[in-house]
Length: 346
Image 1 (spheres, rainbow, N blue to C red):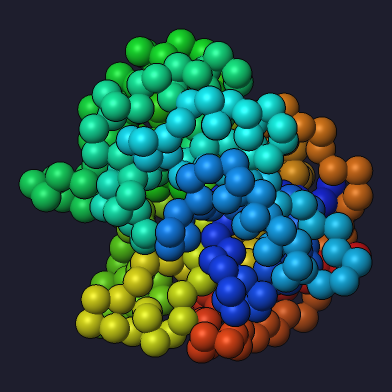
Image 2: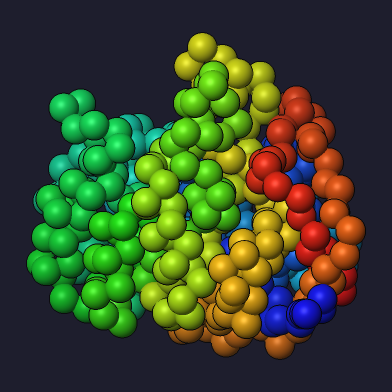
């Protein structure tokens, strides 16, 4: 029975670090086990120019522990006023790795996102020309579309038309949550990738709603039926290079999670690798953990895999803190509702 595995150091291809006191508290949690991460730009105000991305990167670097080798990969927040020239220059200068598309109103701090997709066609065409990937929050925001159907409808009404109209555009479907997302990504060819979160491999919508509302399992896109969770597990553990880890670890203070209209997001940075090892072992796929966490993402983004490694050891259940304290208040660490026997040991 395997009780030790060594893999290339993983990367996180979808991460929220926030800013200020929250950034200083949560950045070390990711830097402990990950070498790189795609950093989400949905601050207030959002990161919309190359200069703003450079400034945010400096704040992140200042928040890291001394001697950390962690590299933040910056993104720009796509708006209907995004300047294609500034975007192209930021990409050419290495300031940004990708651009994030939020449908306006779809999730946390997305009010500045895109409502009229025709207005961003020149930007998308420039991105296709220069090879800059587009990371997409795949949900429509129409009030007449059930929240559990918004990903599937987005694929049909928005994503597929965008891709057909913009040949060569490299797209990452962020945090997919449905079997429709899995199917579309798997058939999309080499210019389409998809990230899967840690928490969507663990929870379905019953965990949020059955027996009382569980605010710390509420996220967007919201967890779906069990059949969708199982489809995500099959995709993540398949070895298919289309799928790679994007935790969407999203810290909110407990005070903001527990409001009458609480914030969406699960904070998984602290225990993600232990959870994933447990999930992959359950699926008989420990030999594919490295592909999902460490190889498929770099391949899609045209980057080399990390040379360094981490080792996970199986033993007695690992204890993780329930809370991370920040200058803004406590943040609850995601509870996977199962013992975690795998511990990262460098």
